[in-house]
Amino acid sequence: MKKLVSLMLVLSMVAALLAGCGNKTAANNGAEAGTEGAANAEGTEDAAGGSAATGEGFRIGGIGPLTGGAAVYGIAVKNGAQLAVDEINAAGGINGTPIVFTFEDDEHDPEKAVNAYNTLKDWNMQLLMGTVTSGPCLAVAEETMNDNMFMLTPSGTAVECVQYDNAFRVCFSDPNQGGKSAEYIGTNKIASKVAVIYDSSDVYSSGIYAEFAKTAPEYGIEIVAAEAFTADNKTDFTIQLQKAKDGGAELVFLPIYYQEAALILSQANSMGFAPMFFGCDGLDGILSVEDFDPALAEGVMLLTPLVADENDKTRAFVAAYEEAYGETPIQFAANAYDAMYIIKAALEQSGVSAQMSASEICDLLKTAMTEVTVSGITGEMTWTADGEVNKEPKAVKIVDGAYTAM
Image (cartoon, rainbow, N blue to C red; front, side, top):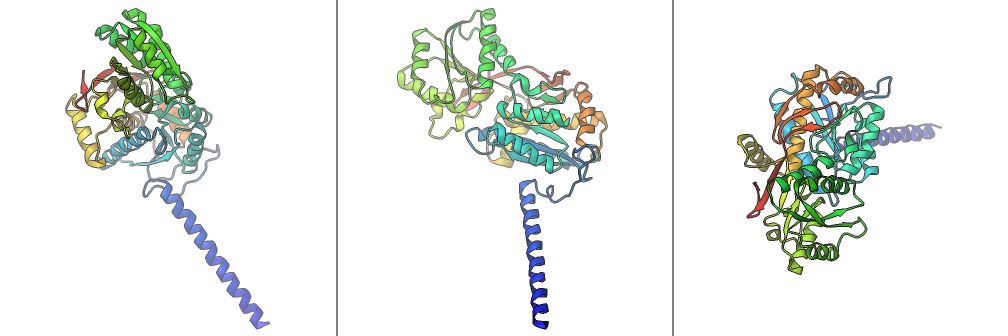
């Protein structure tokens, strides 16, 4: 009997030890998922099911692609936001309260973006800076609306990304980019015969194209070819390019992402077709495409909110980013950097505290966002109640492998 009792005691101790190790492993995994020092704090759920405050600071989450084909966008957003967070916290935070920031990967996938959002909710997120790309942003916007969670997307351009009153954006919408592109090309008399190659399966690309096609005639632009492709057929663009060439296009408008644009430039070069190329923010990143000759991008023009050498403020941002991350920032980084300072301005305007729930903070920020003016890296910005930003567009041209103001 003594031996039996002793054996039972030993087994009980082993079981307790294993349980403790399991809890420690889970805690460590949680810590690795968030920003250093953030995931170790424990939060509680309030009666309404929202995030209750932890007392450590304003918990801001981010969502975007850190892996996959659109990773260059998400990494830039994460880095730009973190740079701003570090600066804000070093300067005393938001009225003395620091920001705690963590970022989740969605791989540019709507379903995974929703999963990332739920992970951040479990982390007791109080505000969302995201998501990065339009498809995932649309999916997450539905969740934030249901939760009354404040959302500021740095780069979700689809109109519906800010269709609810809790959502705002830093970037231009798709229609805005399409209309402004036509205006810029026409006003500056860059070209009168234009071909368009766009992705009809992508909300970003098709949205820009629709407004460009609508606005182009107002500025004397003739669209000589409008050629679509889809996500299932985006490697061979020779047919689209040949139609643009046969139509006498002086310029090809590319409201698409940089991966497909790199293929188009390479294939146009192989065909001996050398028009001007003009794109929007999706082309930002083309100089870093693997196995792409950046010399083929020489002369490419694009609308962008970031002109690196525009003034002392932009030059300081670029220098700080390069020092922190060892590379030149793209405009996605600038939008995210501005996003954090926009959130700071709105929080200070509203007078909220980090002890408030996500829903309480959201209600106050809906009004505060329409009251603030932020002079950021991407321009001086104000917002309307429908979530849209007011600021002036800028254009750059790739010259000697670098973006240069036009």
